[in-house]
Image 1 (cartoon, rainbow, N blue to C red):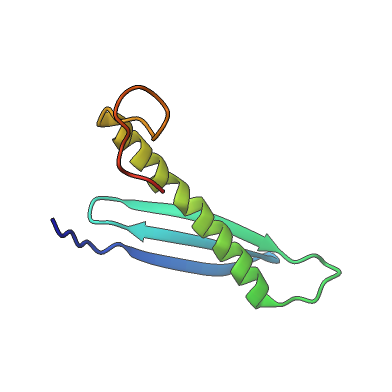
Image 2: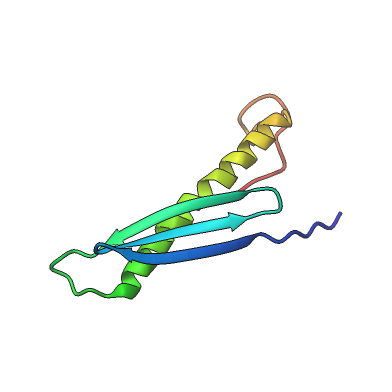
Length: 96
């Protein structure tokens, strides 16, 4: 059965007192999730704003990835399935 849905991601980067901060928002049809990241340039290094943006954005995206994966795990558990190889009940067909 075909399934198509659109989830929108908004990534915001800003400087605050020498620290690059990132906030990423994932909008789904049923919820909005937020992740945060930050980066600070070592005072002895050359300030390259793009590097701070990349590090902060990467941290925010990593932070954002946990809640959907955890929700999927709870949903799989709620179906009565165990992860492949973890018990005697039939394994779930879902994998990452």
